[in-house]
Length: 272
Length: 156
Image 1: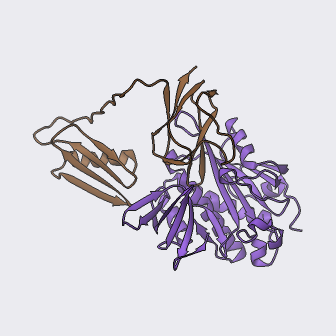
Image 2 (image 1 turned 30 degrees about the horizontal axis):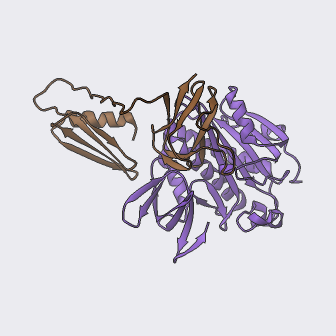
Image 3 (image 1 turned 90 degrees about the vertical axis):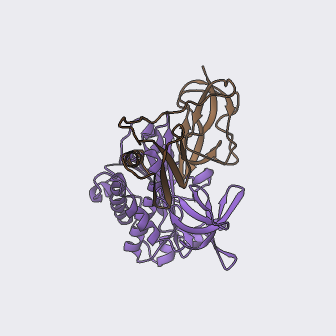
């Protein structure tokens, strides 16, 4: 029963969020929900519109990495947002989306996801979701932000392509039972709206604290891959923009806004 | 720290008998020092922002901060497109993809020139007008600062 396609009415009847998902567009198959949402935003579509597809054929992550999104097995969607905060604070939306999803997973599955900077949600060190934000800047201004999310819900562990089977997982693979995707989405939209409104109100500390509570790697040594360079240091804190505050070996503090962290323990990489 | 907050702090220093005010928050700090020697100066970095407030001793006149005009060293062709944020500069959507633009490319207003990534937010930077790319000022995958020039474009 949980592998039925989602239709727009399923969501419209149940969604409790007032701002997020005030308009819902559902596809059976779509190339990329982010690409579609960006086009809508360019044509003036306003804040809160949700684009969801049951199957995503050209889902992508950062730097064009492919995102595996099979039919009716997960939640593949994008939301158009128009934050009222200055553009240099937009990175916090990345963190708040991960916090909202972690809270939903905690409530629905009783699992305790861990957050990996900036917005990966992990269960037992495996990635259960992908979050990618996109915006367009012209004349130093950005009108809207597209928040794209993929959540692995009902795939079996063996369904994942071999190259990601060790690093990706689904909620079903972790809980051993199938999950109603609509209930999961409704709960997530509710949490997302809560944190998004806090963000618009300037309550950044609440978002950062909620993120830090779920990151077991604060205070640990990490290596951060920035393209060809590797930076090693202690992950001490997040700054008010959500950037990673890394204490380098020479004692200097470095604030980083991009890169792939890997956590080091006892001289070995224990998780990536 | 927001510009309005910084202005408020500068005003507090100006109107007080203290010479230096230093405040730390979220791992960033701001230091405001009264400058009695020369023109007002301001530096800004990731972790520390230092401002010099104008001298207030023996003066009841409010002193407006002066903006020093930068003098270009060599005459440059075209307009600069600057980074609207701190992040990492990417010239193509994926490592194996063609770059959005090259030197000599003709671009239209609204065309994507590059991506600045920060916090897994991919910001597509669009051309502000029709023109031709005459210079790319940053290497692919390098960090960029706020307001750092990225491209030089000759308007059509």
